[in-house]
Amino acid sequence: MTRVVLERPGVVEVDGDVNVRPSHPDEALVRLRLGGLCGSDLAAYRGTSPHVRYPRVLGHELLVDVLTCRSRPELCGKRAIVDPMIRCGRCRACRLGRYNACEYLQVMGVHVDGGFQDPWLVRADSLFTVPDTVPDNAAVLAEPLAVAFHAVQRGAPKAGSTCVVFGAGAIGLLISQLLVRARGCRAIVVDVNETRRRIARELGCAAVSGTGTALVDVVSEMTNGEMADVVFEATGNELCTAMTTAVASYAGRIVLVGWNRGPVEIDTVTLMRKEVDVLGSRNSRDAFPAVMRLLEDGVVNADAMITHRFAVTEAPEALRLLDVGVEQALKIVLAPDHEPGL
Ligand SMILES: [Zn+2]
Ligand SMILES: [Zn+2]
Image 1 (cartoon, helix red, strand yellow):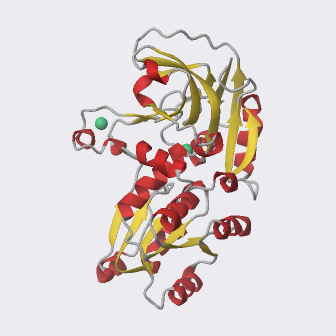
Image 2: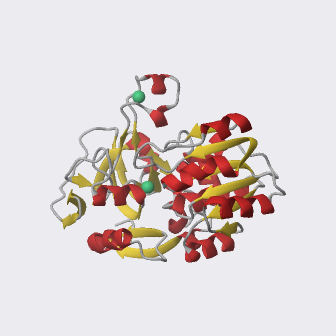
Image 3: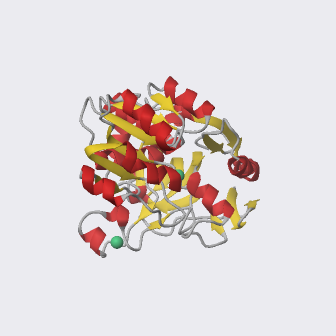
C-alpha cells in the first residue's frame, strides 16, 4: 500500500498508510498497474503550476486493475485507464458539451488527489476498459494520447497536408504519430534536442532544429514556399509560440496545446494578412473510445516513447530525473512493486 505525495515543491514522500474501503456503489476499488509522469507533474514538482495546492497525491496518466465495482461489475478483473477530468456539469463550457474547458475543471493529480495511491478508490464512470490486445506500455499512454488526439481534431488537417509540430516531447510526438499514421499528413517536428529529433525520425517524421529566419527558410524549402497547413505548438515556450505565425501558411491554422508560463506576444498583423485561424486546445473530450481503437491498431509506437521505468517507491528519483531533464528522458513510467492484478 503506497501513496506518492508531493508535500511541497521539490519534496516527494512515499507513504504507506493507505486504507480504503468502497463506501459508495459508484466507486471502484483499483490497483495501480502503470502510471506516467509528464510536464504537469514537473510543473507541480517545481512549484510553477497555477493549479496545484500542496500536499497533493500525484498521478493522472493511469492504467489500473479493477478489483471491485458495484455499479459496473463488468469492470471487475479488467484493466482500465482513468479519465482524470472531473467537470462541474453546469458552467457554460459544460452546457455546450465542451467540458474539457470547464470553468471549474478539476484534474486528478493536479487540482485534486490523483491515482498514485495503491489501492485507490476512483469514480467508476471515469474508467475505460483496455482491450486485451493493447499492451500495458501502450495503454498507459491513453491520457496523453487523448490530449494529442484532441489537438489534432482541433487542427483538422486534411490528408496530404503538411504540419509543423513544435516540440518533440510526449505530446508533440503523439500528435506527430497521429498525423503521420492516422491522418495521412506529413509532420515536420521542431526540437532543439538531437536525441528527440532522432526519435521523431524513427516515428516517420521529418525533424529539424533552429529558430527565427533559419527555421522559416527550412520550412519554406520543405514546402515549396507554401509553409505549413497546420502548426501545432506543443512546447509552451514563448519563442516557439511566437514563431507559429511565421511557419503557418496562408489560410492555415495554428493549434496551441503547450501551456505558456504567461501571456505571449504574437504577430497579429501576419495572422490577419494570412487569415490564419488560431485555436486553443485543452485536455480532451470524448476521446477515450477512439484513442483505445488507435492504440489497438498500433498507431503509437509505445516502446519508442517510454524511455524510463521506476518502481512507485522510487517516485522521488523519477521526479528528480524529470526535473533535471536528462537528454533521453521522454516518457517516464512508474510501476508498483507487486505483481499486476494483485
Ligand atoms: Zn500528463
Ligand atoms: Zn463546467
